[in-house]
Each structure stands twice: as C-alpha cells, then as structure tokens.
Image 1 (cartoon, rainbow, N blue to C red):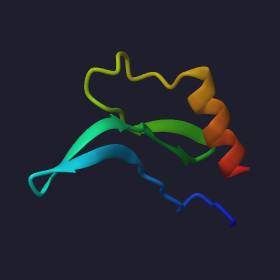
Image 2 (cartoon, helix red, strand yellow):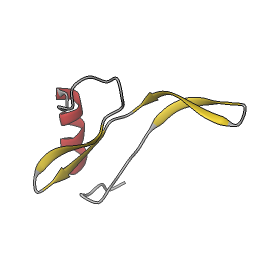
Image 3 (cartoon, helix red, strand yellow):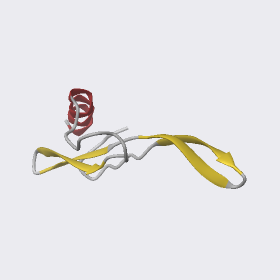
Image 4 (tube, one colour):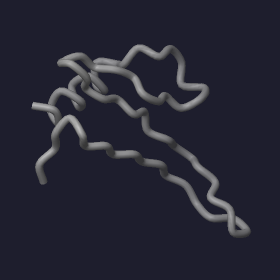
Length: 64
C-alpha cells in the first residue's frame, strides 16, 4: 500500500458494551504538512502535544 500526504489512518482499540463503543486505547494522529510533522489529534490524558520520537519515526516512515 502506498501512503502519501493525503493518507489518514485513525485507530482505536476497545469493545462494545450495550451497543456503545468503549475505547481502551486511541492512537495519536500525526500528519506531514509542508515537510513538517504536525499533531492533528492527541488523545486526552496523553501528556504534552509534542510528538514522541517513536511517533516521529512512524510518520516519517509512512510519508517518505
């Protein structure tokens, strides 16, 4: 699969309970705009909004 600047992947792990989705883990959403990484969404309670080294490496891998 090819990824480019328009690619967007969102992920959440969880379970259904009485017809409602209950998330256990929600991934950050990091994009590349004008050659720079930007934090588009960061789950609540996840700390600061600066991408971690692992998040940077993942975004750079998929955008190159």
